[in-house]
Image (cartoon, rainbow, N blue to C red):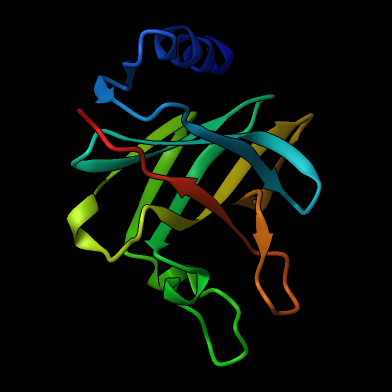
Length: 166
């Protein structure tokens, strides 16, 4: 199903307008990156787009992974993401946090006027994902793939350019 959603994004983009989870999107091209679990496992994707009023961060899982928690923070630069003194992100302080019971998709709608930005923004997407393997439940933390924080953990941020909407 995830590939169909992303395929619909691309098909609709040729007309300059797309729908994501029922939201009208006017970006030329949504930003898409992998959702990386346990430092090296592709557990799904993160898709970011906007409609001139809201930024939509869509977290999708695949290959049997499901969401149990999501945490999203956004700002003009990586310095705007909640961090401790060592420069590591504090996902417990991310303003858009949710608990899930095995969801495979979650959309966060963030008002564009709720944070300062110059057109290119930085987004931190953290999730807790689970998968059943045989008789055991595997739990991993996951990050939207992108630029590393300057600390000892593997947390990352991604960048998105907000397009002008007509």
